Length: 449
Image (cartoon, rainbow, N blue to C red):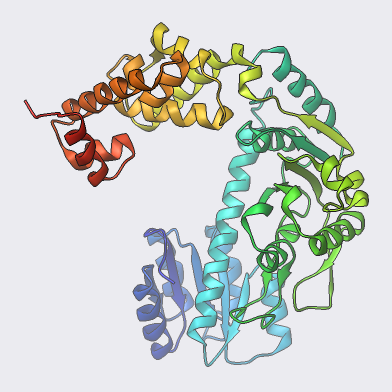
């Protein structure tokens, strides 16, 4: 499992050369930065060349023991994660190491695959801890909600979100795809008493039933083919925080029964296990389906519906809050000008008028995508009408088929000119393949100047 971050580093401390040498080679092949030390004194000196993400530490060494060294290392770098190594699988030494803050321990002879898995999990936990620290710092500066808009419709959403955020009530978010249901969920969480704990999002509609079960509840080692290690599920990871269940209307009848039981008891068993796991989480769910109709036709359990629909917020489609479009478009322009390092700081009036007149079947998500695409083409300082996709402009202006063809020809010609007739780049900008572009060039009789 190669390290995804080339800066991730491991320090190996063991008095046996063969252990240091083999582990160093193993983890360097995985892409980590690795160094080793043969005793505590050397390890303490090596800490100056850190910081080290992971310290693999032998418990029994001449002089200072691994347990003593672990305490010294924590005085130097509190963020370093230690995994203990021992040839003596004694309960006492292992328990003491864990009490002193070790992530886990392994016994000699070392199973490289098992140790690699531990290191990967330790790095994930370290990253999560760092993100939580950053989140706390960010949250401490939050003065209001991040939902953009001042229309009466979105103002009502903000008002209801403020009301429910201070409670632990289960929330049902309704609205078309792309309206921003997850943003509302995250905003409620960020302004709740649970804000210092994670919000875990699960797209229920994107997973098959068996995968969703494992995703939500976790699984034990050997629970099914490929389950080589125990894995915590989303409900367990959301302990203390919030779990956001998107597309809740897509889950099967079996999963509906399991979900109802978990929400009511806050207890569950991992797949393949019998032990009960308890987790304190808040539930926010979302749907773009008519759940009342689903209850009537029997495809969605009535008891689960009432359990989840305690407090309902409907997010309006963008076409019903068009007065918010200029503010949203400007926010997306600012976002992508930073991402692309492009000095485009606004939208020309004609282009903004086209945005406001459009019906937005894809809602806010579609608006963001169009602004991002326009930013690629835009010449500072403003996004112009011809930076918008030709289909979009045609629909916004109500053009007929013959006008649409003329607009398509003009748009393709503009893109080819901007890219100096680079076919590959033009096809990418137009979001079509090269063969299609060649066919359209021939169709419209376009020729390079």
